[in-house]
Structures are given as C-alpha cells and as structure tokens.
Length: 318
Image 1: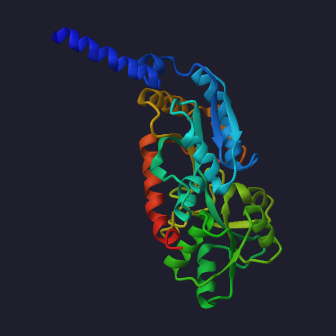
Image 2: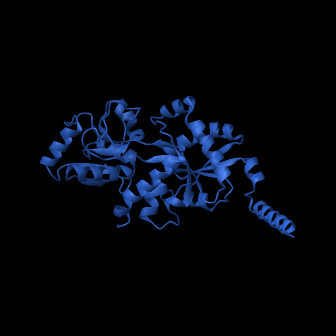
Image 3: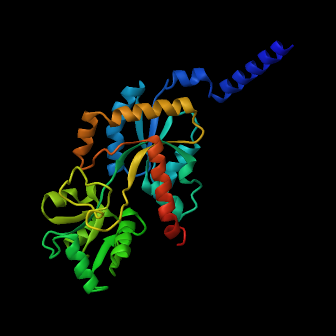
C-alpha cells in the first residue's frame, strides 16, 4: 500500500506541475517560442537602444528570437505591470530601470514594489554628471562649491523633479552645504538646451544626454556621481574623488516577475551574463556613449534594495 500511495502522490505532483507549466520538461525545453522584452520607455531613448542591441545576441544565445516591445506610460509603470501580469513562463522579460522600478513606485501607488520581480542581471549603471557651460568660470567642482557657498540662492540648476539627476544634485547640495535654486525641466534634452541658453547655471544629467555637447566642447563636466569614472569620459573625476560622498547611478538591466520557475530564471541569467561579457556587444553599446557595467543577479538585487531604501524617506514623504 505504501508503494501505491507513493506512486499516486508522485503522479499527482507531476500532473499539477504539468498543468501549471512548471514541470522539469517545460524548463528543459525553454525557450520553445519567441520571447518578448518589454521596454517601459519610448523608442529611441537610451534604455530602448540598449534593449535593441541586447535582443539579437540574447536571442541567439537562447535559441529563440527576442522581440523588443515599447510599453510606455505612467513613469514606466504601465510596461512594468504588463511584465508583472504576464504568464510566469519566462517568455516576458522586463528591461527595467531605476525610474520604473524604484522611483515611480516610491512616488505613486502603482501596484508593485522593487521586490515584485527577480533580478536577471544589470547591464548598465548610467553615469550622472554635473555639467556647466564650457565658458563657465567654474573649472572644477571645488570652484563651483566655493562660489556657490559664498553666494547662497544665487545659482540655479535644471533637472526633472524627483529623478536620479535631481536626487544626486540634492545629495551634493546637502553634503557640500550648498544653497542652489531648482528650475524644473521637462526632460534631459530640454535641460541641456536651458544650460546652453544660460537659463540655468548647472545641469545634473545622464552622460548619454550631454555626451555630444561634452565632445563638442559646449559643456564641461565637473563630476560624475558614480563609484568609478565613466569609461566613456575617463578624465571626469567622481564626486567621491573630490571629497563628496554622493553616488547615484540609474541602472538598466533585465528582470522577470516573481513566480517564473527557478530553472528558467537560471537559463536567463546565464544567457544575459554571456552576452554582457561579449566584447562585440560591449563595443556596440559604448558607441552610444554608454558603458556596460554588468552585475550578476545577486548583486543587481542588492542595488534594487539599496536604492529603494535610500530614496524612500524623501520620495514617500511627498
């Protein structure tokens, strides 16, 4: 009787696993159809560009095509929820960013938290730089800090409210004791236009947003808010190097909803890691003024938690 009971239990377990699609055979055959990679931001943006550069080699690594789908709106929440609500079978991936993954759910009740997802791997930690016009009297961050401290409320910075460049500038102002006036912007590009036109005095911005102006000597970068210098701009020192412990790098990486079976998650993590470490892929991304700064799943998950805990006190109090 024990053997018959054991057989019945094992058969029932396999049937349930098969119905749910989580059985060993399902995981072993994954993927058996095309995969969707959701980008929560508009086509042509920096996240979209990296996603499209990733899609082809990732598809080759997995043996099935990967199609990029832009699902924008709601500060990235609409696309993020689409990934969360999709079947938990590994065929819907999320190209996630600090914006949709951390900042939006901290500012609004959007139906998910950072830990509603499983990390696959970080691809990019975008550099945020503090830029001034090329003809500015400030040649270094020390110059800026000295002058701004001597003239409280005189100088302005442009940034979209409550996004990473804004938060980095606020952090710098706090640790350096600066009194600067925020002039809200509608985006990174409008902010760059405002700086060049003289409508603001300084601009915290993603490196990719101001890269062309830096290379054309229309702007000067005084600091980068990262742990290390940006490989695309190795001459720009970090804020930490200059005595100001400010670090805030918007991430871009791949995630899946919780509930996707562990064997499938493992396959995705291995595939993304292999592509991220490929020299050809890295060179293609670097040409867009973005450097691959790959982190495996465990470390990527720690970035999620750190950013959530860092920005929650300020953003959730609004």
